[in-house]
Length: 151
Image (tube, rainbow, N blue to C red; front, top):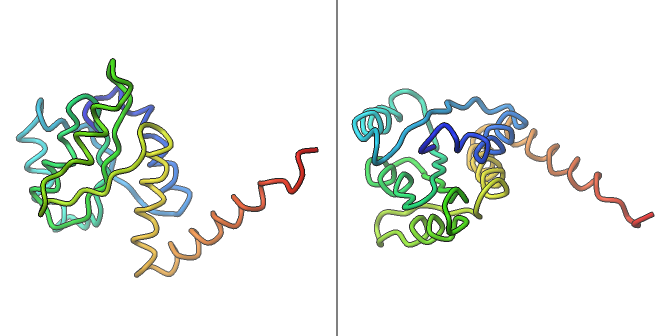
């Protein structure tokens, strides 16, 4: 996240991971305002056991791209609707990465954050049976919550 104010927009990612039983390490890091903090955290992440990054950023939204440039770990980018352009600027900055520096980009705002959390869970589920089971249960409960008729 680029600022503490973005927490409300990114909380659905942490909530989705928690629902799947996946521990997360939530940080406020800005590619522009805390570049040394960002660099140190990203380059040490794999050794610290971090497997995936979920980066939420608004405005110029360079956090996911700069993160991807520094690591081999998967980077999931969530454009945040925290600017006068309602996140369209962040979406374009996140999705238009140069070839060779991939960032998986999700929808703008809270829905994108939730989907990024669930997608991270799906990646982890490939090698973690407990996460796979939790993801199956999550999706089954989601399906069961949809009524067959509107009345």
